[in-house]
Length: 100
Image (cartoon, rainbow, N blue to C red; front, top):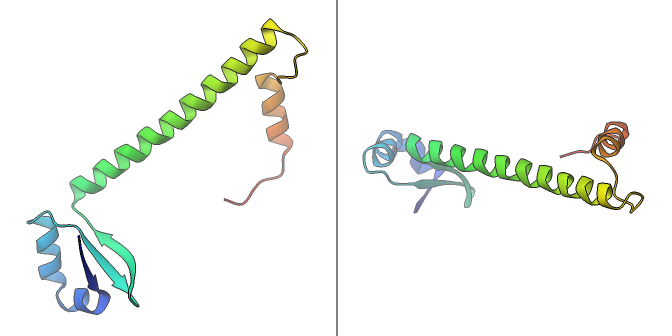
């Protein structure tokens, strides 16, 4: 993956965009010598979105599975210390918001 300075990208924008769209290259643009952004094809961007969405779905499924397992364990052994899903929801709704 080639890296080019922002000033070079400004001067040669048309050529850089052609390298990405026609040649399928991925080009990193640097600002003040540090990687700032990447130019990729729309196909690459769509694949990144799909991966991100799949990861989000996987995280939700894992959380739901863990909660279901906790509820199952609580049902098998009442009073074992595992909160119910309703208790967790209530606790989360009362919690102050966190900064991302």
